[in-house]
Image 1 (spheres, helix red, strand yellow):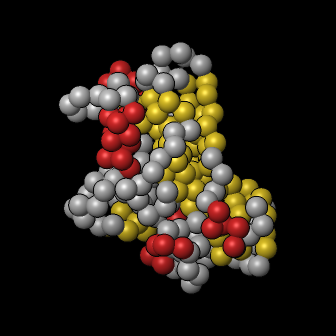
Image 2 (cartoon, helix red, strand yellow):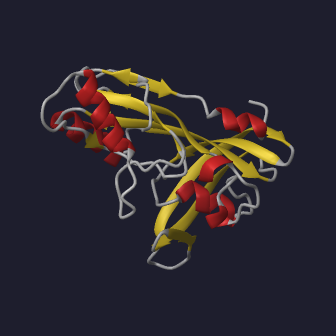
Length: 219
């Protein structure tokens, strides 16, 4: 069983660190998900009888790691979901990429999802995708970049950088030639800033990348 140590918890939300390789929500594989684990944690910690409510308000790719926010009440879920929908929540990602990227940039494309993979397309079927980034470090032909997502398309960070020749380390689906531990990729949700659903104040949560990153770049 996956062990979790909440970054933050109150009566309205719980914030945890998702390990790479773990599903956020169960799928057809039947593998245990982070949602299941957090529910069990709440049930055991607070000795709750019956089912535990836990609202999923955003997602993170299975091979990626980082911050996940769950709602503990339906009201909190509704208010947080609205913040995500209206792009009032700021999410910052750290990514290790093959090659030396420019120092900073803005990437704009149209992305089309086909099955479990996304593609850059010029067709009208594609959805607009935009992100901005800045390079924080470069060593051994690997760039550490900080990404600010403007849109939230399927595999957006992975496909937009790969399209320009900078695959995420470990992301064989999009062309990486470098292995990363335990079927994970070097994509990490590093920080989230949101308005607390009841306190109406801004809160920022941060979590450092997994220790395995130290083998690829000096952090």
